[in-house]
Amino acid sequence: MSDATNGFPLERAGVTNGLPVAAAPRTSTSRMVADALRAAIVEGALAPGAPLRQDAIARHFSVSAIPVREALRQLASEGWAKIEVHKGASVASLSTGEVREIYEIRSALESLALGLAIPHHTDASLREARALCDAAKRERDPSRYVARNEAFHMSLYAPCRRPQLLDMLETLHRRGERYLRLKFGFPDYKRESDAEHAALLAAVKRRDVAAAQSLVAAHLLGTGELICSVLDAGTEPDASADASADTKRRPPKRRAPPSRTRS
Image (cartoon, rainbow, N blue to C red; front, side):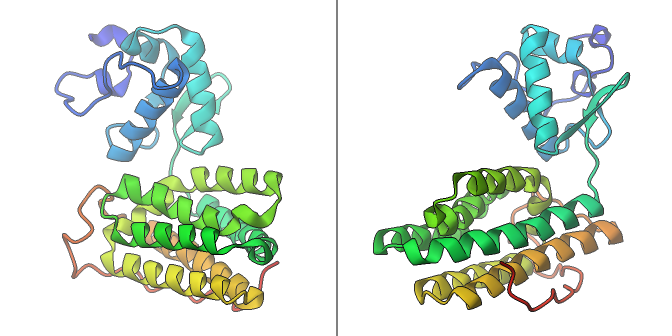
């Protein structure tokens, strides 16, 4: 591509880790474009504040403007992009206010979902949750870890028989994906998080609703505060690095969340 792309950041000369050119869509053109832009944001090829110009993106992928608009709306709904009237779309900045709100809402709704789900868990559903918990613990790739983490959490809530609640939780997980990746720069914190997952699953297996709700609320509020501390301190780690690469790195001290049951 040339400068005719009107400023699309990945089209500058010398950019080698840009977006794939006209890759075959998995499910739809708009999904392919959204997935590629999301990957570029995660990898740092598209930095916070970078413009996402519809015409340039459409030329890059050799598609029409319609799927690009759909892709940008999808990214905006997930918190990856922002769309402003008369200014267009750009990569969203990381915000302590947003991450705190996301994890506060998650703590309340996931406590509710967990309380509703526990009476309906079966031996089979608990085995599935155990397998997903173990898979998240073993995972070392940030992209796959985020997916495995969400799968584990959602497996705990799946039996709640509240489809709208589950839809809301999936949306919140997507909006928090950028932030969750930050903890991969702190291996000690991931180990702590994995231990909290195990304790939470044990409470669910005991059918201890109060303990499980308290644990999930503390886990989520603690994660939110840790990420806020990282952003406030300006010590964002390299989320693409191997989780074992720097075992001496320590996260900011976690502030203890309120020890009360959310329902």
